[in-house]
Image (cartoon, rainbow, N blue to C red; front, side):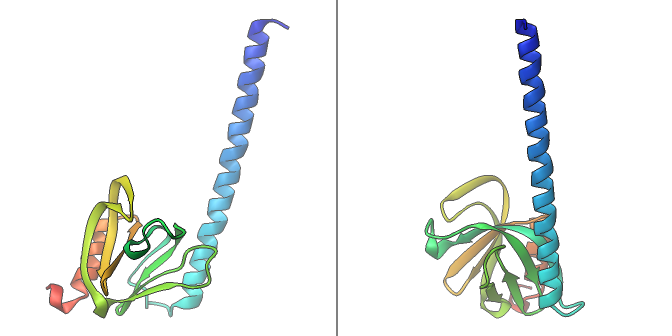
Length: 150
């Protein structure tokens, strides 16, 4: 077996392994997304959710800094609250819109900096942040739902 044959064999193995990893990741993400959508459907009445993101990436609470588990899960905005449940957790984070004092877009939260906008919600002396699709639309929807922000 020559050097070229070995290089081609190694390249083929790498391609196969990467293909398997991509397929497994897609299947796992698909299952997680379906589970999150089922959680939303089971928790909220039809039409109650004003905005949803079944795979919002939670960056944590500012008060807990690095002493918390971050992760993905469904984020739901209703007329009265912002609700998030990290996949694998039984306890949702519920933020009453009446307690919200600010909503903005940031690129750093709880010690983690990223190169994309995060939705940050400040409430009751704390704040939470998520990476969501269309963070500006989330911010605007929360702000328009709060009379004191008009």
